[in-house]
Structures are given as C-alpha cells and as structure tokens.
Length: 234
Image 1: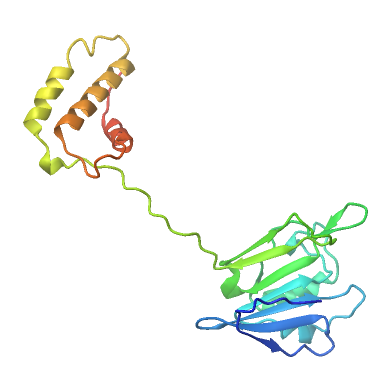
Image 2: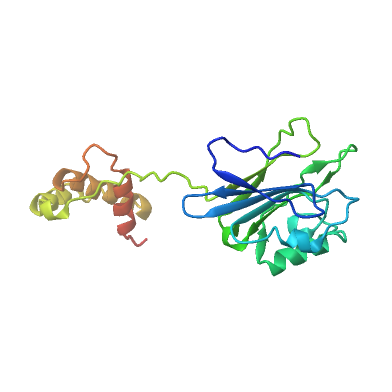
C-alpha cells in the first residue's frame, strides 16, 4: 500500500496504530490548520482493533480505503456484520460517510461491491465531494476522488441593459406611442395578436425615446421585462 504526496505539500507522517499495519496516516499543514488523512486497508481475514481504529477519527480528518465491510451507509444493499463497528464509530465521532452510492470493486464474475469507503469529520461533511472514476487503471478497484472546499470560479454575468427613465423624453414617447398604436394595429379579432402588436409598438417607442445603459448590448432581456409588465384582457 502506498500514499503518494505531491512534492509541494507540507506534511508529517504519523505513527501507525498498533496491530494495524495496513494504515498510512499523514498530517498535512494548511494555511491556518491541519488535515489528517488516513489511507487504510483492512483484509477480510484480519481482526480489527476497534480502539485503535477509533484513534483515526478526529477534527479535520479524512479516512479512506478498502475496509472490506458492507453497509447501507455507503451503498451496499445487504450489509454484513463487520460494518456494524464502522457505523458505530462514524456515529459516536459525529463523522460523515461521503460515498455517493456507486460500487467500487468488480468481482471476476462481473458483479460489483461497495468496499472502498471515504469518511470525513463532521466539519468537512458538507464541504466534501466523492466521485468514482470509470478508468480502473488495470485494477479490480475503481479509483475514487475526494474533493474538499472545491469552488467554481465566480463569473459575473453581464448586467442587462436598463432604460434610464430619468433621462427619457416622455413627450416624444407619448407622441410616438400615439402614432404607432392606431385602430389598425388593434383591428385583429385575436386579442393575443392585438396584445403582441401593442407590445411591439411600446418597445419601439421606448427604444427611440428612452436612453439605455451599456449601449450596444442586447435589449432582449429588458424587452422581456416590458412584456411581463403589460397586461391585456381577452
């Protein structure tokens, strides 16, 4: 079992718990705190020391690996006896299983099992994501990826253009509207068609008589606002 760490990461190896050789634990130094990560493998035929396993839990902790236990907490339909200990430890330590339910191990007959588990301390639960990669890289276990505090870049949307009502030429707007909204415009027997024509006339008059911010941008969004503000009865 290996734990590979990027060269630029400041970390410290921690002692391996007694009678649990297949565990690698490191403490990573963050900007203002630490993150403890335990990479764990528990063979099916090996007894697990509950007290030693409990020492892995704590604040700012990630425990991940193949524990050979089946529980509904991480997606197994039929749990086994070994899972009870892990479920109790997760509960008493206020930790969170962040598995999303996908299986991670494929048997030689093609069936799949949920054997790889990722557990984080309660303070990290809402900020953690867990995914399974489709490329097994030649293994019978699918790689899993844990992300913590992943943030998408904020991109401010373009502000829709707005009419500058304080600079509007209302006298011209009134004249233009009266010229465009004539009896001929409302001559249709279809009230919805009349409403559409009146709306187009008002928008055209506004475009001529009311300045807009951010000149050159599309007027479509604000025109939709104008249309929503108009009410017509059939």
